Image 1 (cartoon, rainbow, N blue to C red):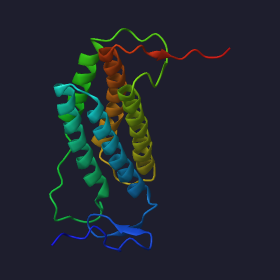
Image 2 (cartoon, rainbow, N blue to C red):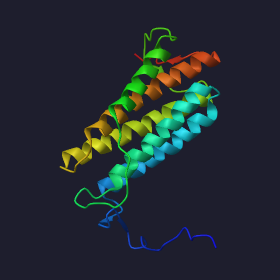
Image 3 (spheres, helix red, strand yellow):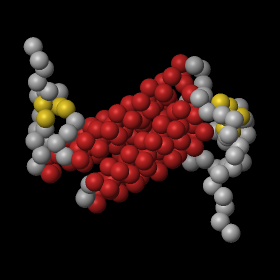
Image 4 (tube, helix red, strand yellow):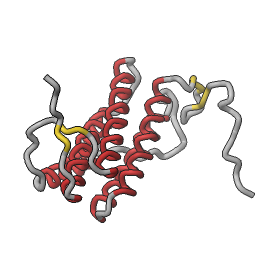
Length: 186
């Protein structure tokens, strides 16, 4: 028999962190890991639009890291959990930086601001980048509220948004799509 997906435990607007503590679904911790989940879904969509084995492999790794981050954020820092939660590592950030540098090596110098668009793959990368920036703002908000957050999470999310920006440019370049430069009205 299949396990039921609905538990009805959240019907009154509360949810449990890993560790059992009940918090409102509007809590910044829930908003933050929910945004990480949204970002993970957009990364999956980005991956569906790109046909490059190395990029596809890295995007799957990024999705794994986002699950790691979400798990960390879903834990009650005041309670010991019986679950084994994987850790984010400095090498995860280095992997993003190396990929950014490699893609940037193929791209022309950027001389103006770029508008998202030109191809669905490019636009989807930019949507993921924007969700990533929102996740970063929420992580900073947690930190400002005195809620514990691993500094590597902030670094990783910051670098991931940079990666997604460069990926958008790289995908457009590979597809032969001209970048849409911003021409401000004066």
